[in-house]
Amino acid sequence: MAIKVKEKVKGSGIWWIFINHNGKRKSKKIGKDKRLAEKVANTIDAKLTLGEFNMDDEADKIPTLKEYIDGWRDKDGEQQTGWYQKVALLSLKHSTYRSYRLIIDYHLLQAFGSKPITEITSRMISDLISKKIKEGVRSATARNIKNCLSAILRHAVNPDALISSNPARGVPIPKPEDERQSKEQDPFTWDERTKIEDTFKKEYPAYYPFVVCGFRTGLRIGEIIGLQWQDVDFYQKLILIQRNITRGKTTTPKSKSSRRHVRMTSQLAEILKQHKKYMAERTLKQGWKSMPEWIFTNEDGTPLNYGNFIHRVWNRAIDRSGLRRRTPHDMRHTYATLRLSKGDSLAEVSKEMGHSTTEITYRTYYKWLPKESRSDIDELDTQTIIKSSLQNAENGCV
Image 1 (cartoon, rainbow, N blue to C red):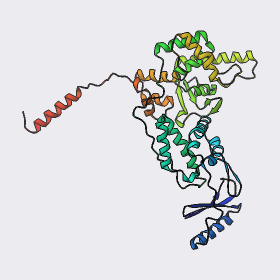
Image 2 (cartoon, rainbow, N blue to C red):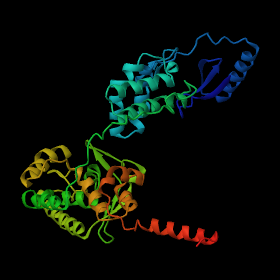
Image 3 (cartoon, one colour):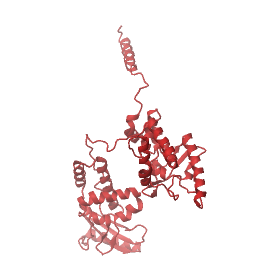
Image 4 (cartoon, rainbow, N blue to C red):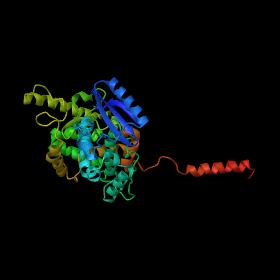
């Protein structure tokens, strides 16, 4: 049995009593007087002890999963804001809440949409994950389905206190032994990188600095598009990564480790200096009040449109170079594979790429790590012989 006094909406100043007794839940709105709410809670606690309080009277309406996500009316007829509007849109990155919306509509609502959230169990969630994988869904997608549901139910535990624990927590995600990577990395070789850069320099010079930046830093495309001149330190040859642009939305980097400093090569630093002069001249020519803060821009000085860049510039440049089609993201793969193949530190490459752990870097690019061994494998035989000789000497053997 538990009785809690708290605000249903934190900071609202409206106090409620939440009762959880013998598997039944009930809430009661008191108002702005917290002391009164505590007094009523003590009274109800006493009545529960004496068996004089009927939990079935005016029982709380438990929302279904669909209602909890998109909103519902409680037993008092008050409209309750759903998780998606109250939490997802306010606290998640643009790309995350968009992907969560797709997961909700195509997976979660079909399975649990009409079920009260108190009836969703760990076994049901595990069965759903297994079913999805048998239907051909990749384990990574299955994990995203589970994570989305877990985020929803975690909020139903605290602060909403509608369920006592999160049934999605701890549900394992099976990975089929024969599951293949969804897309193999397809980096450019040293010669191919030179060829595509030369093509851009000759055919699309306005985008040449963008491409060189991609190949020399390994930044994600959204991170490159989000670069501003204030992020570049020409003296120390460093670029501060502190924002990301995805689908036209400016956000923070992908993760905490993604906010980082990345070194510039001498060639990149010189190219960006020349590009800055070009942008200053363009500002005067266009009659803009000031030079755009963005390094790579559209014709109107706004951040580069990635979709237009791919279709109007990148694909055409690839075709003119005579190379097979690849995506701009493969510039990031190229940066990693070229550095690792020449023996650069895995930890250093991982940090500059913004990976949260070196394990991610290793798992993604292990095929490009140097194959040659610098140690002498025959030393194992030598150590064995030495140890054997020492043991024989100790035993008095000749």
